[in-house]
Image (cartoon, rainbow over all chains, first blue to last red; front, side, top):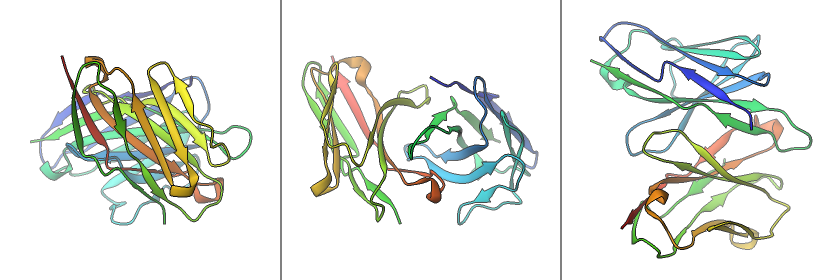
Length: 118
Length: 116
């Protein structure tokens, strides 16, 4: 199956700093990637859809100025948490969409990045 | 709007018992995909199965089996003869058409604890 990586796998930062998380599709090109956030003992919540060469589409309630998404190439999307605060501490997971024949296009998930803001 | 409901938040069983995880979904799409994922303590999502809305055949893969009932909008998952390594959170998810952006809607998850 297709492989998606994330870097870093975990990060600890001070409140007020910005943190960048990378999501890479290693063996396929992905024009569309997704970013999810998962708080402890909760489900995955879609934050935004990242489209190569265009602006990301954010879900309702997600601050686009706080969570900056850049999808500059067909294999890389980045999520920057700006001016991070403790409430931003969470598990961030990306996925990359691999287009296939027919209606079913599958998302392949990265291993996640655990962000802790002190 | 799409919705996925996993009514069981946590299930605890003893090894070798069978465990069934319920998943009920809501969608207005006539064509859609249903998924199950496993999330072990490491956090990485493990893909288990994808089923399209036109295929109501039940599926078995080793100790895993899935029962898709379109009439009741359910896609239940059974682990037969559970093992300690099956302990994880299991998510059911629903995806619409390309036009809907291929977004995945996840259920709340069911935590399965298999005791030795």
